[in-house]
Amino acid sequence: MFDDRSAYPHPDEFKVVRPEYSDPEDEGDDVIAIINIPPFRVVGYSATRPGARRAALYEASKEYRGYHPSHRVESPFPDEFEDLEGTKWSRVRASKRDELGDYEFEDENGEDSADIEQMLQWDVRPAPVYEDEEDE
Image (cartoon, rainbow, N blue to C red):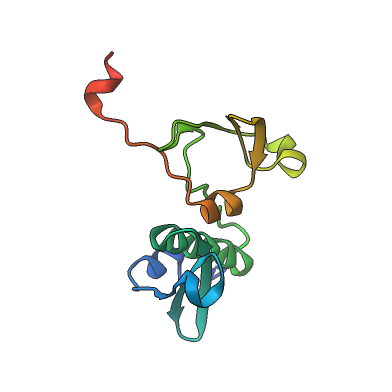
């Protein structure tokens, strides 16, 4: 039997560790979140602390995949959603992601696309959907 274990912690283990943050004044425009599970360390960059933490957790999942190739790195975003500013986002087909990025969106400047790392850095968040709104 093949044992798929490694010393690298599962990405869920990083969720329970409080990140260390460096504020934008210290490091430029981005907040940096650092999560340590010695001897491993993941780093995430974003416009806000919650975004930097989410970016670090996404990096933990990508790093885990390096140790466990069968691990599927999930997008931290739904396939289609509207963000807090009213921008609509949709997941790009897998065959086009190398060319276009992970998500397409349309804003006042027209259509564009971004990869997940950019979205985390910008701190894109889906607007909450309330159960009574779905029935309308």
